[in-house]
Image 1 (cartoon, one colour):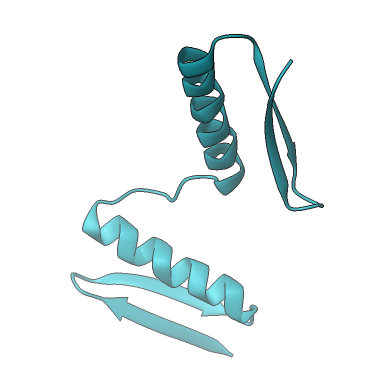
Image 2: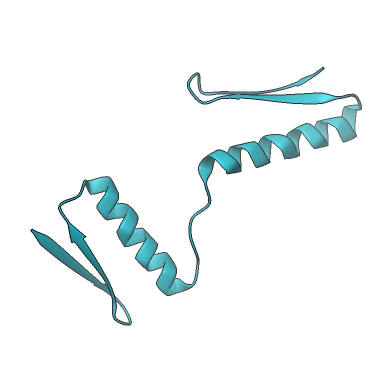
Length: 82
């Protein structure tokens, strides 16, 4: 079974027997590409980036050396002074 989604100016995405999440990701990617928004950011890298920003700001505010620990399995981000 094959589906074809048309988005605006002749952007076609052919989708063949895939999960709902994969279909949604392809549709969103097509919409982003057509809008010139580019690819989405990697969420893991976003978490690392924001944790590093907070650790840097804590060092500027409070001084000292700060470390970041991220555990995705436990759902935890920890920023502490060393």
